[in-house]
Length: 505
Image (cartoon, rainbow, N blue to C red; front, side):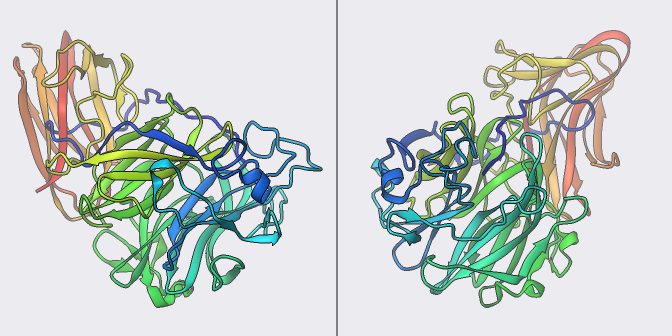
């Protein structure tokens, strides 16, 4: 991927997101990720520069070909003339830019890395461009795979046709589409009809996708172009992958023919998403980059349609600067989760590892429910502060070290978070709250993104931490804002909140 790299660091934004309920933690819980091996480029375990003329690349999208190999699709890739950092930097005469590549692996012992055994080549020792691209800016700058799957002996890749790279974290696609290979990825054919054309507003929800198979269907977990959209869901019978009219989209209640009726299954920012079933936990895993948190995160769900848990951080950008593009390895077993991860500098792909444990608690849809991931004194993503407040970091909470607070003398002040819910389901929002004795107008509640109050519970003071809950039916809403706070009338008042929970009932 040849975009300029910059994380959007968490910021305080007025009027938009909110907390919910007690100390249930989303599952699974990943351990701090560790780097296993560098897979591509100079000093990599695969010596890809000498073997495949591959000095720099990114992504490393993994899928099982059904015949004992892992196929790995890479994005924009470069040869000897690449100098870095990042994509596209180097001598144009010798940079040897290929918009995408495909390599193969039979390695099942991932503890010491992933051996890349062969590549689709156009000549000995030179990995070839698998999917053709124009290399014309504001037309088709590049073509990049975003997901892969096998059905029988046929391999499918879903790719995006990039029109141009925008500001950091943003790019704009012409369309996404399927290509297929019947010779194990050596040669590919782009389907002329299995394409999801982008809109004039660049907001099609299936421009970048993960692909999974389940119960006779191929599923797409899609996002818009760039790094700031929600995740959506579609499916088709395994026998009709290339029949675009056969695809159906999840509208929160059923599968519909209307692509625009698809509702979010996970609240953004979601980008470069990877999804797979984890037999050890008996749950689906969804891994992606949360651009606002500058972290790779993990959600879990018993069903692809949700509800998906709150985010758990797997890798932080403070530990691995410029990280992105994480894709789970299909041959991960037990509690060991292996995944590829890219870094903008040195613009290469690494194999990573984390351990998964299940905390056994009911799935909480809230991310960072106890505010323990907050590193500063001001609430940051996924929380937002509307008004005046901050983070207490001195054991003033209901549990753990941190809690959030709002404090002012006049007006409305709230903490907020946006969460994806399943339409027409029952939920309970809970939070542990403590207030000043003179705080007479406390509130927790749920509103639509249009500002309509879905449910709300107001009350007076809570001198000791008290669990406050409100039940609601999501109705037709698929994204809601949770909030907790108060309205002041001229005297100094405060409210502390901790251990927020949102769960289905």
